[in-house]
Length: 216
Ligand code: ADP
Ligand code: AMP
Image (tube, rainbow, N blue to C red):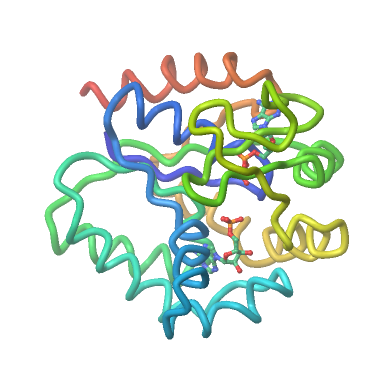
């Protein structure tokens, strides 16, 4: 299974990538999680990314492309790209990389959701920084507030999930990432799903619409 999850912040890409990873063994590659881990470790990459992430802007393309090249080299089976590519330049570079490795994508999944829902979801998101697993204080609360159901670890609210940064990130999606919808539609790879449905329904849509393609 080789997929790209495309869609605005808060659409549920990470939630579904983690479910499909457990079910089908395709590895979730979240560029946001990789960058956050680098910031935690204080690496050069993490320091470089910090100001962009805090303001809700995108990290420069060349930095992200180098990062993905390194990730792709580590992948032996399938993948789910979660939050990458986010610009046409990243998509073109990724196409070239896939060609080089003789890898074909099964599908690019577009998560459709409206802005109001996205703002509500992001401002209520709670994340386990160790695993990237997310909860939602409104739609999907943990059994004990502030604590991960699986590993008991503390849940935090991401700095960039503050309302003013959320607004900026959604604007950045509209201007810099949304053009990828046409890019992949032209390539005949785009599959659209209704991301407003409950988590289990979204998973069912993915299994029906993407499972068939991946099995080909
Ligand atoms: P993304 O990775 O696209 O930014 P997440 O998967 O982190 O989005 O989801 C954003 C927030 O919305 C999280 O708090 C998550 O628990 C919640 N969420 C995800 N999918 C759904 C859904 N289908 N219905 C309601 N809430 C959802
Ligand atoms: P995410 O966890 O996907 O919401 O990403 C959090 C932040 O990391 C974004 O707001 C960007 O600053 C940065 N980021 C993650 N992925 C990318 C990418 N593919 N290109 C540029 N910046 C990215």
